[in-house]
Amino acid sequence: MDKKGFTLLEVLIALLIGSITAACIASYISFLARLHNQMKLRRVAGDAIHAMAESIRFNLSLFQVSFDNSNTKEKELLDPAKLPLAIANNGIVQRSECASKTTVIRCQAYVGYIIIPSMIVRNVYEVKFLAVSTDAEAKWKQNFSYFITVK
Image 1 (cartoon, helix red, strand yellow):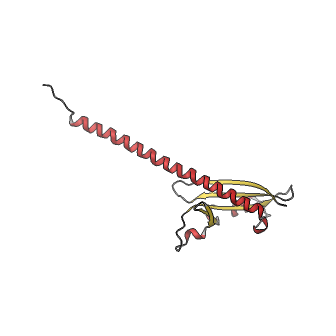
Image 2 (cartoon, one colour):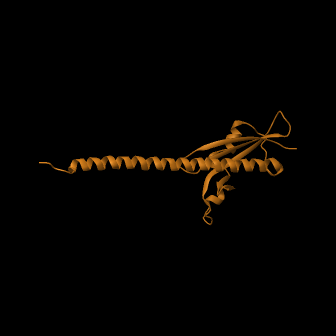
Image 3 (cartoon, rainbow, N blue to C red):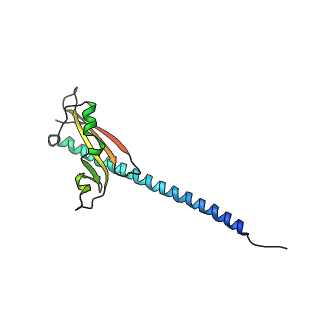
């Protein structure tokens, strides 16, 4: 006899291979989407922090300078749980605005900074920033450091 067609076992094996391939592709696309969002957030954070560093450079008298440059003071001021600012909608806002029930601001990262004067060169300050993502599944933190001069 000359039978044409597939057996039930062949169809089940083909479905199994197809579903495994589809699951792998879906997982990879999900990974790429998370990676894209993380890279976008890092770029937005970098741009916002750079703009803030420029603002500090032009208006240093409006910001508090820490003359205690010990590591313990720096860790205290840049504690990720206590960072006072947040990145939302490509700008920097107060962290308290993220948790407010009256606003619908979605904060993507928390930001803090410390301004330390140079002990060697007069009118040179180091501005250290810390940005920490709010996303629990794609947690990252990044340090930024700028040296600014003030006349």
